[in-house]
Image 1 (spheres, rainbow, N blue to C red):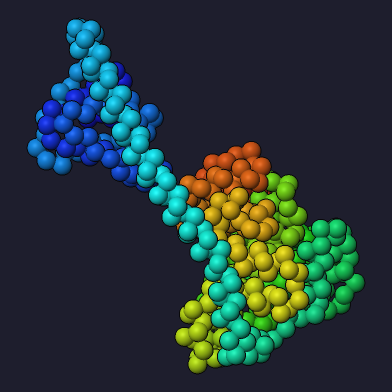
Image 2 (cartoon, rainbow, N blue to C red):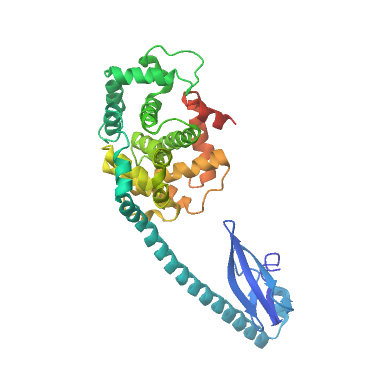
Length: 392
C-alpha cells in the first residue's frame, strides 16, 4: 500500500480501477481514482496518511527506485511523463472539488448569517412578542451592575465599591454565598470577607446568576443550563486574560448570559404551552438576545449572544460583528466540552485561537497548560455544582 511503501516507490496500474482516500484531522477524504495507465508514488500525499482500495480486480506493478534506475533512459522518461500526467489529473480533480466545496461553504455561511434575522421576524409575531413582554425585568441593581461591568472604562475597584455602597447588593452577596448554591463549610458574615474569599469576578457572577434565577426560576434543567453558563463564564474570563484582546469582566458577563435563551425557552414552555410550536422555530440565541435587549443591556452584549453559535460554522474573518468577543465565547464553550465532556475540539478552533493572539493554538494543550492551572487556583470559589463537575 502507498502509505507503507518506500518514498521512492512507484505504482503503475496495469488494469482495473483503484480509489484513493486520505485521512486528516479524523476525517476521511476521497481523492479520486487511478485507472489503467495511471501512476502514483508513495509520497503523493505528503505527510497525510492515505490508502488505495481496488474497486474491482486490478493488477498493479510496484517499481522501486533502484529498479527504476535500472530501466532504459527512454522507459524512465516515459514513466516520468506518465507519473506527471497522473498527478496533474488528480490535482485538477481536487481543484474542481475544492471550488465546488468553496461554493457550498459560501452558501452555508450566507444561510448561517441570515438565521438571526429570520428568528427576529418570528419573535415579532404577536403571540411571541406578547410572551416576551410578560417576562419580568432584571432587578434594577443587577442591570446597573452589568452595565458597569460592560463599560471598558470601568475598573474592578469601582465595581467593588458600588457593591459595598449598595445595601441591597451587599445583602444579596451574603445570601448567595451562604446558600447551598456554594456549599461553603463555614458561614460568611460580611461582604468584605465574601469579596476576599471568592474574588471580585466570582462575586459579579453570583450577583448576575441570582438576578437571572429570579426571572427564570429554579429547577433541574435550569440549574444544568446555569452550571454550564457559570463554567463558560469562568473559562471566558481566563481566556480573555490570556489573550489580552478583550475586557475579562465583559467576557465573564457575556459567558454567564450566553445561553440564557435556553432558560427563557423553558420558562415560556412552562407558562405559555400554547406557543411551544412557535418556540421550536426560533433559535435559542436569538431568544436570549431579545430578552437581553429588553432588559436594557448594551447592544454589544445581545449581538454577541445572538451570533456566538455562528462560530461553530464560520471562520473569524467571516463573522460580521464583534469577532474578538465571539471568539472568546466560542473558545470558552469548546474548552468546556474538552475539559468536562472529553470532546474532540473542532479543527477550525485553531483559527479562533490565532485570532485571539494566544501563544498556544492547540486547544487540548491550551486547556491543560493554561486553563486547568487557572481553575485549580479558584476551584474553591466556584459554585458547588461546578466544583463537583471539575472534581469528577
